[in-house]
Length: 94
Ligand SMILES: [Zn+2]
Image (cartoon, rainbow, N blue to C red; front, side, top):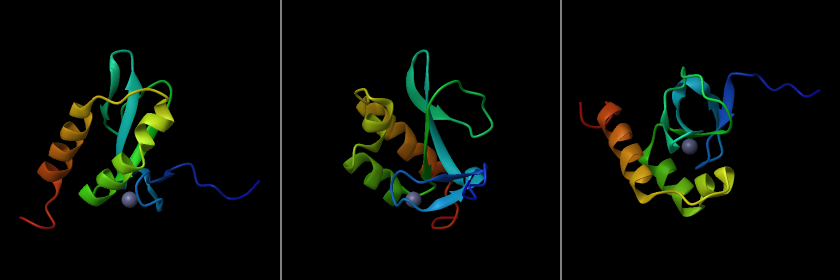
C-alpha cells in the first residue's frame, strides 16, 4: 500500500506528520488518559502532538483527545501537557 513510515505520526493539532520522537504522546491507560513517553509501551490508542503549546491548544480546541479516546478528558491533562511542553522547551527561554 501507500508509503507510511511506521515511525511518523500526525500531530492532532496542526496535522503535520512528524517523526514520533519529535512528538508528545498522550495515551490511554488503565487509570485514564495521560502523558506517556514515546518509548513507553502502552496498549491501545495514542494521540500525538508536536512539542508546541500552539498544537496543544489546537488539539484542545478541536477536542482531538476526547474524539480519539471517545471519552471526556480531564482538564488537568491539558495542564500536565502544558507543563511538560514548557519545561522541556528550550528554544524560547533557554
Ligand atoms: Zn503540531
